[in-house]
Length: 205
Image (tube, rainbow, N blue to C red; front, top):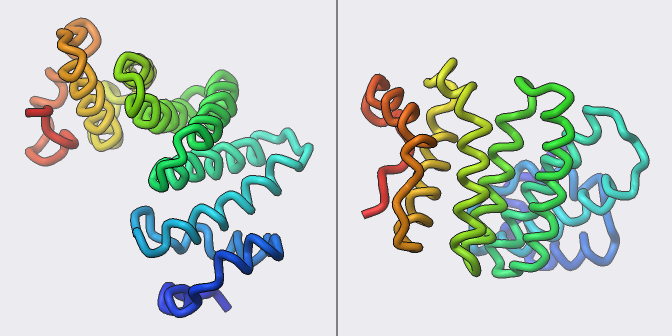
C-alpha cells in the first residue's frame, strides 16, 4: 500500500529511518509522492531522492530508459538539495543530469531535448546564486536548444520556454546587460500569438 502524505507528516523520524536503513523500496515509493515544495518535508524529500539516486548511480545498466530515469532523479535531487541551501551538492547533481540528458538528446533529439533544456534551467538556477553570468549562459543554451521545438509546437512548450525566458531576462537585468535580441526575437513573436497566460512568468520588473 502506498504511503500517504498524511502518514508521512505523522512520522517525524522517517527521514532518519530511510537514511539509516537505506530502504530503497520505501524511498522509491515515497519519492514521487512528496510535493515539489514543502518546508516541512524538504529534508525527507532530499533523503529519499538521494537514496534512489545512489542506487541508480551504482547500477551498470546503460539502456536509454535507465539513463533517462537516472537523469530524472538527478535533476530532482539537484532541486531538492538547492532548496535546502546545499549548493555544491546541488551543482554536482544538476551537472550529472545535464550530462546524461545531453547524451540522450544527441541520440534522440525530439524525445530528450526538452528534458535537457529543463536540466539546463535547473543548473542555471543553482549557478546564478553565485554567478549570474554562468546562470545566464545556461539559460541561453536551454532557450537555443528548445527554440525549434517551441516554434513548431508553441503551446506544448510555452510553460518551459516562458520560465527559461524569465530566468534569462532576470540574469541579464542583474548583470546590467541587454538580452540577446537574436535569441529572443523569434520567441517573442510566437508568444504574441498565444492566448494570454500561456507565456509563462512575466518579464522581471
